[in-house]
Each structure stands twice: as C-alpha cells, then as structure tokens.
Image 1 (cartoon, rainbow, N blue to C red):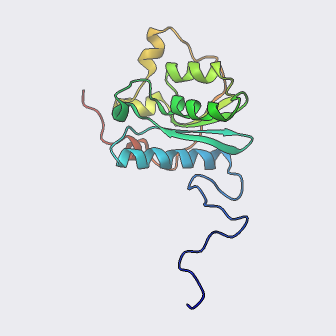
Image 2: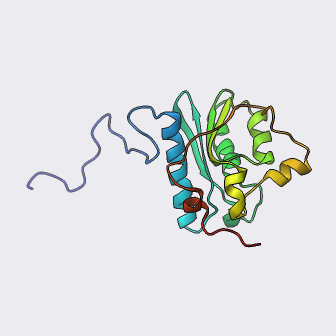
Image 3: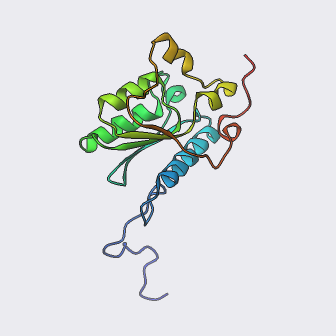
Length: 172
C-alpha cells in the first residue's frame, strides 16, 4: 500500500504478550495448567519434565523449567530456577508457586526459607514413582515428615495423566 511501511512501530500502549500471561487473572487451576504446558513443552524439547511458575499478587513474576540436563547441575530444579529469577524482582514473601510435581526436599526448603505462602502442584510422589521421579526416599533419608507440611502443599487435578508428562514407565 502506498504510504504505509511494511513494518510499523507498535501503537502507543501496545506490547507483545508473553505466552504465559493472560488478560484476566487465572485461577489456581489456570496457573497450574500453564505450568504443565511449560513442563510438557520442555520435555518434548529433550529436557526434564518439570516446570514452575512464581506468582505474586496474581501476576506472573517468573517461569522456569528444570535445567539439570542442560546445565549439568543437579540443583537446577524448576522451583529453584523460578526463585532465582523472581528474587531479582523484589521480595518473595507471600508469593505462590505452581509446580508440575511435588517439590523435592531441596526445593521445599528453599521455598519455605523465602516465605512462599503456598505450593500448588499436579503430580505427587506416588504419581511420579512409576516413571522414576519420586523424591519420597530423599524425604525419608532426611527424616523430613510432610505431616504437617511446612507450608500449604495443595495437589490440584491435572488435565493430563502423569504418563503424558513423564513418559514411559521406568523399569529399573
């Protein structure tokens, strides 16, 4: 078209929309479903099937995936990655974490120490065990009972089965 540039600057007040944000505030279930989609995408790209979102005042502060394989670092769990990113944007006290799976002891400790108010997750250790992703042995070795939990740990229904996220069952 005459007089029109093929690439126009964005209009005032417009901004690119991140795939993990929405116009209206998601519910706990909505945040968890975004977390599961992130974990599933990461697994399909060859990563470990874990993701976490950190949300404060119903606003996404950080999204992360498990980077253990890529980084060769066993501490690069999704929850810790989300904490690292979010801590650069202010205090974490009172924030909520959405995780694809029940946090391991290392992640749970970091979440408690940083004042996270609650964790919502899709799959517990029993769901993950057939696929080799069970952290209950670590809890037992550390003698860390989860009853009562140190912060609310709330399992929500998953729109996908554990096998869709974790892949074939482990035959160790």
